Amino acid sequence: MSEVVLGVDLGTSAVKVSAVDRAGKIVAQQSYSYPLSQPKPGWSEQNPEDWVNGATVAIVRLILNDGLKPEDIKGISYSGQMHGLVLLDNNNQVLRPAILWNDTRTTPQTKEIADKMGTEFIDVTRNKALEGFTLPKILWVKENEPEIFAQAATFVTPKDYVRYRMTGKLAMEISDASGTVAMDVAAGTWSKEVQEAFDLPASFFPDIIQGIEYAGNVSQSYALFSGLTVDTQIFGGAADNAAGAIGSAILKPNMVWSSIGTSGVVLKYEDNANVDYKGKIHFFNHAIPGKYYSMGVTLSAGHSLDWFKSTFAPDDDFTPLVDSAGKSTVGANGLLFTPYIVGERTPYADGDIRGSWLGVDSMHKQHDFVRSVLEGIIFSFKDIFEIYDEAGADFDTVIASGGGAKSPLWLQIQADIFDKKVVVLENEQGPGMGAAILAAVGLGWFPSVQEAAENFASFGKEYTPNPENVEKYKQVYAIYKKVYAATAEVSHELMDYRRAATN
Image 1 (cartoon, rainbow, N blue to C red):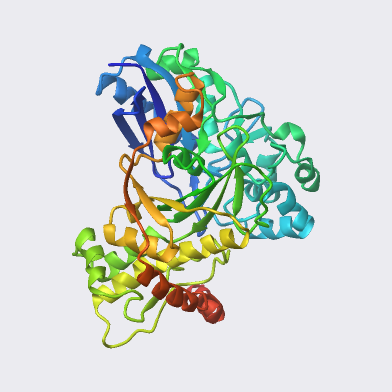
Image 2: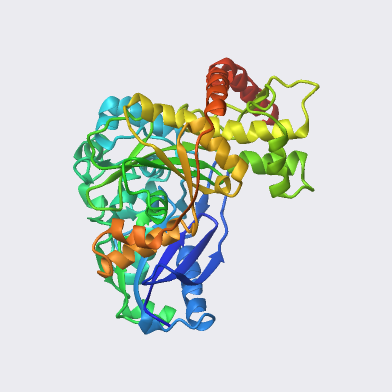
């Protein structure tokens, strides 16, 4: 077998390790699942040891089951679930379970940050402090577990902890560091203003490295543990969305990424830090040196469709169910669905808003409801596009990935609602491929991330807007935009009622 790099994609439910050769071909792939702990409502935690063990099992299987020779594994890099807090003591031992991105216990700390720093916080970090981010988690532990926090010497995010365990060298890669919302994003350094405002010593914050930067070789102890050799070089890696954008070749300002997973992401490559979205969407340092990316999140994208299927059509297969939407019309025969079934992130940042159907009529059939769900998800993406439009961002191409890229009908709906060209990837691998690209560039196989990504990525079919449908969708979207304001108060009252009824 030829020389390969490993892309370690550390997700919330599993780690997937891809072996990629110099031509960008995935020659082998292994994954390993691990549990999620939810000890209280709104809490979401994991044992960092599970990540290390899972990644190691996957690597051992690549060597034993797939025949990878350890000496052929030239480099390793990472994609990691963002924002998780791993607290370490003076000996770099883990002090408590990691608090994950989808943990929502930190509402009081987000308010504390907003009250204490106001707009200065957004000016420096380029983001609002939301529950999912790392800084509110640090403050939660400081305020609620002071005996643990007193032992804390430093912290890292999930994939940076796994890299530490493989190299013995501790650092935080810049795209994950910016996702902590404790960084001066434009300067590329930890924010002194944030440190002083919340009484956090500079020594608490680890050194920042770049995504393609050499982070060390496989350590002697990890070589014995995993079967790798100490000659394998390890590189910084990237936060999962940054890695996904690289793996999907979103590397020019005229392109955005539309990714429909459980949640949905609209991500745009940014050449510099001059653009100011005023905290309306996230703005982070990229894993590509000196570059940035912005993104908005729809909390329940694919999850809305999964929920619909499991609740109303559990015995139907996905493909024919989605295809049935073709029997309906643009605008689902006057039926509107808002996909706020677990709250919403962008543009509303409202944990208590809930979804709704409007316009339900006795004439509506199941295929109209399916169509309304597909359209509602894309309307929620269009809300994010509108923020870009207001800021003067100019782009003409949407790269679609995830569940929304598997249905020609849904891809055409995207093209018509966005009024943009929509392109699919032929070899969609996302974050794991992005991680492999960073290792390939770090090794010198390619002179730049852009060149590596263009070599590794392969674009497929294009979907162009249908002008007649574009005009119809403009009318329907104008109605959709009114729904949040019209239903928010009712949603909040219903949530209050549910809480009171369950206590």
